[in-house]
Length: 322
Figure 1 (cartoon, rainbow, N blue to C red):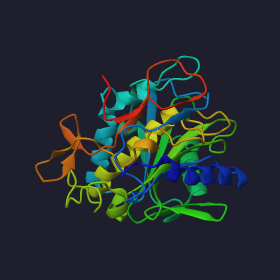
Figure 2 (spheres, rainbow, N blue to C red; figure 1 turned 30 degrees about the horizontal axis):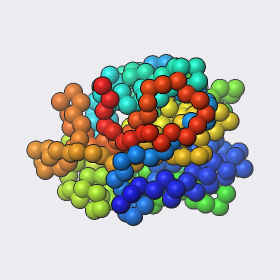
Figure 3 (cartoon, one colour; figure 1 turned 90 degrees about the vertical axis):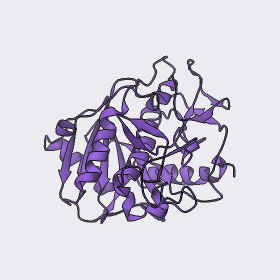
């Protein structure tokens, strides 16, 4: 089955148009896997809208919201600590802007200084405004640094937390229609553009947001590290982080890679993993980082050249770039 970006386009357009109407940030959503709408593809177009990419070393900050098991936290922390410099993340370096700047294959993350625990400060039923408030409070309280230029802030919600986007009467809820999203915000810190992302715990709905367990993907009974929440979350984190560095402003108003016309780098290859192997516990994986196995989606690779505003067709889904 061919991955149809035309099928997903109305979802993105609705998100963007609605977000602007209700004065919330332009949001790019990672949909749940939908058999028949998504599947293997050789190449897919992506549009460059002329806006900036994140060209500095990327600093990741994480709010573990609610009760996250230690095993899940360890998987996520270990992944983020060793993601930068890998051939897998290097696919992002194929993205540049009109200045000739490229995304760097550098991800800085120290669990001690770059992560905090939030004990349900906004309750267990969240909307996007709550997600932004969680990040705002962490920055205002000095728990996380104010890093407008190079920071990407993740709010990772525990298995008992619900989250949804209500955009112009259309609801995008975690587990039923989306697994995560990213957006730029002008309200988290006044007069700054803060890039943030929501990612829910896939253990809440493994048959919607975890590729190993999903019946129409790998239909495994386990995940590479034996923890659905942690293993499933790193795939969504990779999707949202990659899209943030290549399209940080989405449409605010200077979108970069995607910019309403097509999906972003992760959207075009969502739920596509390429060749896989079997872990000792029988689950599928396609990437090993620091001797740890993960199942991480592919990304769209574009030619390493300076850009003009145009639609690129000579692109493909890959899992590494040398």
